[in-house]
Amino acid sequence: MSLTGKLLRGAPAQPLVTHYDDAAGTRVELSVATMRNWAAKTANWLVDELDIEPGDRVAVLLPAHWQTAAVLLGAWWCGAEVVTRGPSSVAFVPPGATAAEAEVTAVASLDPMGRDLRGDVPAGSLDYIGDVRLFGDDYLELTPVPGDTPCFMGSTVDEIVTAAAARAEVLGFTSSSRVLSTLDWPAAAMDGFVTVLTAGASLVQVTNADPAKLTKHQEAERTTDVLT
Image 1 (cartoon, rainbow, N blue to C red):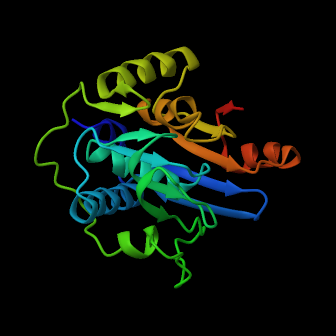
Image 2 (spheres, helix red, strand yellow; image 1 turned 45 degrees about the horizontal axis):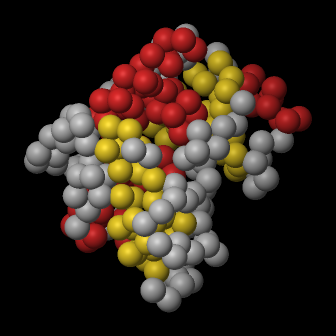
């Protein structure tokens, strides 16, 4: 089973990722079912349009965001290895950025409501949201991803799953936990994302965190744990 299959196991209506951007003043909440749909669309797009296969390198050069979560889960679902540097088959970048070592560059709009680039696509790049929303809401994993497949920065699926489960136990995360995190991804994706989902917990991710607002976020979201 892919890493994504091990992470998206909660009840469909359960909140999975709630994303705040304190600089923009936005809040978006995605359930397990909604995030699963975005991840499936991403996996289908990567496989059908870009011919990504298990072990292929996918660079994720995005800040912590719900779109980044969809990219990570979609890449892992089809067996890709997520990297943050070096050559890659495709690189996901924010608007205005480039990826010189990637065969294909996909620009994520990072719009809180999931709007695409609205035609403002740099020459030679792809509009991630504009393209991926046309693909199916389910991904059929025809061939299970082997546990020894590279998954994240050189570590295999089995290694990531084992490490995340151990870390979740140390942190005391359970399926009833609601974790507020200001950690950035993908550099801190293990603690700030994978470990939380491994425990079956829900994540409140705060990007561009304003320290003065964190207590308010904790109270409003009824969080049980904090990662900073």
